[in-house]
Image (cartoon, rainbow, N blue to C red):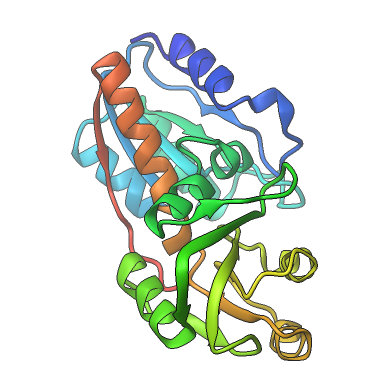
Length: 246
Protein backbone atom coordinates (compact mmCIF):
# COMPACT_ATOMS: atom_id res chain seq x y z
CA UNK A 1 0.00 0.00 0.00
CA UNK A 2 1.28 3.47 -0.84
CA UNK A 3 2.25 5.38 2.32
CA UNK A 4 0.46 8.52 1.16
CA UNK A 5 -2.72 6.54 0.54
CA UNK A 6 -2.42 4.98 4.00
CA UNK A 7 -1.95 8.36 5.66
CA UNK A 8 -4.89 9.85 3.77
CA UNK A 9 -7.13 6.97 4.82
CA UNK A 10 -6.07 7.20 8.47
CA UNK A 11 -6.46 10.98 8.56
CA UNK A 12 -10.01 10.67 7.25
CA UNK A 13 -10.97 7.63 9.33
CA UNK A 14 -9.74 9.25 12.55
CA UNK A 15 -11.17 12.71 11.66
CA UNK A 16 -7.82 14.38 12.27
CA UNK A 17 -9.00 17.78 11.01
CA UNK A 18 -11.44 18.05 13.93
CA UNK A 19 -8.68 18.14 16.57
CA UNK A 20 -6.30 20.75 17.90
CA UNK A 21 -3.56 18.56 19.30
CA UNK A 22 -0.21 18.69 21.11
CA UNK A 23 1.70 17.03 18.27
CA UNK A 24 1.18 16.53 14.53
CA UNK A 25 -1.17 13.69 13.60
CA UNK A 26 -0.33 11.63 10.54
CA UNK A 27 2.97 10.88 8.85
CA UNK A 28 5.73 12.28 11.07
CA UNK A 29 8.81 10.69 9.51
CA UNK A 30 8.76 9.55 5.88
CA UNK A 31 10.30 6.26 4.85
CA UNK A 32 9.85 3.89 1.91
CA UNK A 33 6.94 4.43 -0.46
CA UNK A 34 5.31 1.01 -0.24
CA UNK A 35 3.98 -0.34 3.07
CA UNK A 36 3.08 -3.96 3.80
CA UNK A 37 4.52 -4.73 7.24
CA UNK A 38 3.44 -2.45 10.10
CA UNK A 39 4.52 -2.44 13.75
CA UNK A 40 2.11 -0.80 16.18
CA UNK A 41 2.83 0.37 19.71
CA UNK A 42 1.91 2.96 22.29
CA UNK A 43 5.06 5.12 22.11
CA UNK A 44 7.72 5.47 19.42
CA UNK A 45 10.57 4.90 21.86
CA UNK A 46 13.93 3.57 20.72
CA UNK A 47 13.03 0.05 21.84
CA UNK A 48 9.99 0.04 19.54
CA UNK A 49 12.04 1.45 16.65
CA UNK A 50 14.64 -1.28 17.21
CA UNK A 51 11.90 -3.93 17.12
CA UNK A 52 10.62 -2.50 13.83
CA UNK A 53 14.13 -2.65 12.39
CA UNK A 54 14.59 -6.24 13.54
CA UNK A 55 11.25 -7.23 12.00
CA UNK A 56 12.04 -5.36 8.74
CA UNK A 57 8.89 -3.27 9.08
CA UNK A 58 7.89 -0.69 6.51
CA UNK A 59 6.06 1.52 9.01
CA UNK A 60 5.47 2.15 12.70
CA UNK A 61 2.04 3.30 13.88
CA UNK A 62 1.82 4.74 17.41
CA UNK A 63 -0.29 6.80 19.78
CA UNK A 64 2.67 8.82 21.09
CA UNK A 65 4.88 9.99 18.26
CA UNK A 66 7.31 12.91 17.99
CA UNK A 67 7.46 16.74 17.73
CA UNK A 68 5.40 17.67 20.78
CA UNK A 69 4.59 21.29 21.51
CA UNK A 70 6.95 23.03 23.96
CA UNK A 71 9.71 20.45 23.48
CA UNK A 72 13.08 21.63 22.08
CA UNK A 73 13.00 21.99 18.29
CA UNK A 74 16.59 20.86 17.85
CA UNK A 75 17.19 17.28 16.68
CA UNK A 76 19.89 16.20 19.12
CA UNK A 77 20.46 13.44 21.65
CA UNK A 78 17.61 10.98 22.07
CA UNK A 79 15.50 12.59 19.33
CA UNK A 80 18.40 12.45 16.85
CA UNK A 81 19.06 8.76 17.59
CA UNK A 82 15.42 7.80 17.12
CA UNK A 83 14.94 9.74 13.88
CA UNK A 84 18.32 8.61 12.52
CA UNK A 85 17.31 4.97 13.09
CA UNK A 86 14.08 5.48 11.14
CA UNK A 87 15.77 7.29 8.26
CA UNK A 88 18.68 4.83 8.03
CA UNK A 89 16.24 1.93 7.69
CA UNK A 90 13.68 3.78 5.53
CA UNK A 91 10.82 3.24 8.04
CA UNK A 92 7.74 5.45 8.09
CA UNK A 93 6.44 6.76 11.42
CA UNK A 94 2.74 7.55 11.78
CA UNK A 95 1.40 9.00 15.03
CA UNK A 96 -2.19 9.67 16.13
CA UNK A 97 -2.80 11.19 19.55
CA UNK A 98 -6.19 12.74 20.48
CA UNK A 99 -7.93 11.30 17.39
CA UNK A 100 -7.00 7.83 18.65
CA UNK A 101 -8.34 8.59 22.12
CA UNK A 102 -11.67 9.83 20.80
CA UNK A 103 -12.61 7.56 17.89
CA UNK A 104 -16.01 5.91 18.52
CA UNK A 105 -14.90 2.45 17.35
CA UNK A 106 -11.12 2.01 17.70
CA UNK A 107 -10.43 4.83 20.16
CA UNK A 108 -8.79 4.15 23.50
CA UNK A 109 -11.86 5.30 25.40
CA UNK A 110 -14.32 3.34 23.25
CA UNK A 111 -12.21 0.21 23.69
CA UNK A 112 -12.00 0.68 27.46
CA UNK A 113 -15.77 1.01 27.67
CA UNK A 114 -16.21 -2.22 25.75
CA UNK A 115 -13.57 -3.98 27.84
CA UNK A 116 -15.40 -3.07 31.04
CA UNK A 117 -18.89 -3.81 29.72
CA UNK A 118 -20.13 -0.27 30.29
CA UNK A 119 -23.29 1.15 28.74
CA UNK A 120 -22.25 4.56 27.41
CA UNK A 121 -24.46 7.34 28.80
CA UNK A 122 -22.09 10.24 28.09
CA UNK A 123 -24.14 13.48 28.21
CA UNK A 124 -22.02 15.49 25.76
CA UNK A 125 -19.31 14.95 23.12
CA UNK A 126 -15.69 14.98 24.18
CA UNK A 127 -12.84 12.80 25.39
CA UNK A 128 -14.36 12.06 28.80
CA UNK A 129 -16.85 9.19 28.77
CA UNK A 130 -19.56 8.17 31.25
CA UNK A 131 -20.93 4.64 31.50
CA UNK A 132 -23.07 2.42 33.69
CA UNK A 133 -22.41 -1.10 34.86
CA UNK A 134 -25.20 -3.66 34.33
CA UNK A 135 -25.64 -3.68 38.11
CA UNK A 136 -23.90 -2.11 41.12
CA UNK A 137 -20.76 -3.82 42.41
CA UNK A 138 -18.58 -3.25 45.44
CA UNK A 139 -15.72 -0.85 44.88
CA UNK A 140 -13.28 -3.53 46.02
CA UNK A 141 -14.57 -5.84 43.27
CA UNK A 142 -14.39 -3.05 40.69
CA UNK A 143 -10.75 -2.33 41.55
CA UNK A 144 -9.98 -6.02 41.05
CA UNK A 145 -11.79 -6.01 37.69
CA UNK A 146 -9.76 -3.03 36.47
CA UNK A 147 -6.57 -4.75 37.61
CA UNK A 148 -7.55 -8.00 35.89
CA UNK A 149 -8.58 -6.36 32.62
CA UNK A 150 -5.52 -4.12 32.31
CA UNK A 151 -3.08 -6.58 33.94
CA UNK A 152 -1.88 -3.83 36.24
CA UNK A 153 -2.96 -2.88 39.78
CA UNK A 154 -4.44 0.64 39.76
CA UNK A 155 -3.76 3.25 42.41
CA UNK A 156 -7.06 3.69 44.26
CA UNK A 157 -7.82 7.04 45.88
CA UNK A 158 -11.03 6.41 47.85
CA UNK A 159 -13.81 8.93 48.24
CA UNK A 160 -17.01 7.48 46.80
CA UNK A 161 -19.66 4.97 47.89
CA UNK A 162 -19.04 1.34 48.80
CA UNK A 163 -21.26 0.18 45.92
CA UNK A 164 -20.53 1.73 42.52
CA UNK A 165 -22.43 1.75 39.24
CA UNK A 166 -21.60 4.91 37.26
CA UNK A 167 -18.07 5.07 35.85
CA UNK A 168 -16.38 8.03 34.15
CA UNK A 169 -13.15 7.42 32.30
CA UNK A 170 -10.57 8.95 29.98
CA UNK A 171 -7.30 7.30 29.00
CA UNK A 172 -3.84 8.74 29.57
CA UNK A 173 -3.03 11.89 31.53
CA UNK A 174 -6.60 13.07 32.04
CA UNK A 175 -6.65 13.39 35.83
CA UNK A 176 -7.62 17.04 35.40
CA UNK A 177 -11.03 15.94 34.11
CA UNK A 178 -12.07 14.74 37.57
CA UNK A 179 -14.25 17.81 38.17
CA UNK A 180 -16.27 17.06 35.05
CA UNK A 181 -16.70 13.47 36.25
CA UNK A 182 -17.89 14.83 39.60
CA UNK A 183 -20.33 17.19 37.87
CA UNK A 184 -21.73 14.21 35.93
CA UNK A 185 -22.40 12.35 39.18
CA UNK A 186 -19.94 9.50 38.62
CA UNK A 187 -19.17 7.09 41.45
CA UNK A 188 -15.71 6.42 39.99
CA UNK A 189 -13.34 8.28 37.67
CA UNK A 190 -10.59 6.31 35.92
CA UNK A 191 -7.64 7.74 34.04
CA UNK A 192 -4.01 6.87 33.54
CA UNK A 193 -2.05 9.24 35.77
CA UNK A 194 -2.56 11.12 39.02
CA UNK A 195 -1.64 14.49 40.54
CA UNK A 196 -1.05 15.45 44.16
CA UNK A 197 -4.29 17.37 44.45
CA UNK A 198 -6.36 14.49 43.07
CA UNK A 199 -6.26 12.72 46.46
CA UNK A 200 -7.98 15.59 48.22
CA UNK A 201 -10.38 16.34 45.38
CA UNK A 202 -11.64 12.76 45.26
CA UNK A 203 -12.03 12.47 49.04
CA UNK A 204 -13.76 15.82 49.47
CA UNK A 205 -16.04 15.40 46.44
CA UNK A 206 -17.34 11.90 47.12
CA UNK A 207 -15.79 10.08 44.15
CA UNK A 208 -13.33 7.21 43.83
CA UNK A 209 -10.31 7.81 41.58
CA UNK A 210 -8.32 5.06 39.91
CA UNK A 211 -4.97 5.83 38.29
CA UNK A 212 -4.80 2.77 36.05
CA UNK A 213 -1.64 3.64 34.14
CA UNK A 214 -1.03 5.96 31.19
CA UNK A 215 0.45 3.16 29.12
CA UNK A 216 -2.03 0.51 30.27
CA UNK A 217 -5.07 2.63 29.37
CA UNK A 218 -3.70 3.40 25.91
CA UNK A 219 -2.75 0.01 24.48
CA UNK A 220 -6.21 -0.93 23.21
CA UNK A 221 -6.73 1.81 20.64
CA UNK A 222 -3.62 1.25 18.58
CA UNK A 223 -4.24 -2.52 18.71
CA UNK A 224 -7.77 -2.02 17.40
CA UNK A 225 -6.60 0.39 14.71
CA UNK A 226 -3.94 -2.07 13.58
CA UNK A 227 -6.52 -4.86 13.32
CA UNK A 228 -8.77 -2.56 11.33
CA UNK A 229 -5.97 -1.87 8.84
CA UNK A 230 -5.10 -5.56 8.58
CA UNK A 231 -8.73 -6.50 7.90
CA UNK A 232 -9.38 -3.70 5.42
CA UNK A 233 -6.14 -3.63 3.44
CA UNK A 234 -4.49 -6.99 4.13
CA UNK A 235 -1.49 -5.39 5.80
CA UNK A 236 0.76 -7.47 8.04
CA UNK A 237 0.29 -5.71 11.39
CA UNK A 238 1.90 -6.70 14.70
CA UNK A 239 1.46 -4.96 18.05
CA UNK A 240 4.66 -4.78 20.10
CA UNK A 241 4.26 -3.96 23.77
CA UNK A 242 7.14 -2.08 25.36
CA UNK A 243 6.19 -2.30 29.06
CA UNK A 244 5.93 0.96 30.97
CA UNK A 245 4.94 1.10 34.67
CA UNK A 246 3.66 4.68 34.43
